[in-house]
Length: 122
Image (cartoon, rainbow, N blue to C red; front, side, top):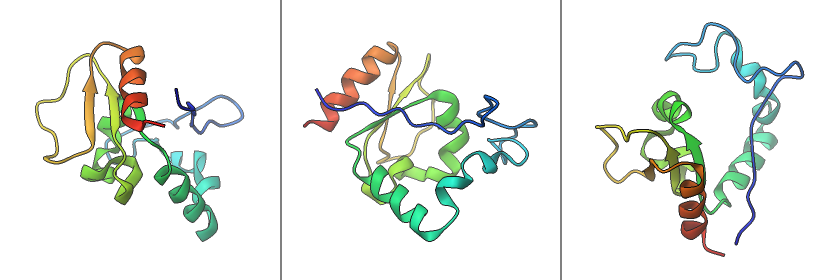
């Protein structure tokens, strides 16, 4: 079994998104401030890219998938590394990217974790 890493950004007062979320602003008005620490300079962007590129696979919820897809494209959150992304959902979407890295898991987080660990290997 591999290592499982939980990654999220949250403000000190417990918010993970700002108010007034829209499709264009999935983190809400000024919500980018919640993750600015990670992408504030070139060194941070490079570090984050290396870290995500080294992951074997990732798991996300359906809302994260739906709101992030315009930025991720077919390669998912790992970009050119093209690591598999397992999306926990009640129902897989009708339209998906051809040759995308996405798999939709409808049997819960345990099923998604088992699939991600199998895909990641050692």
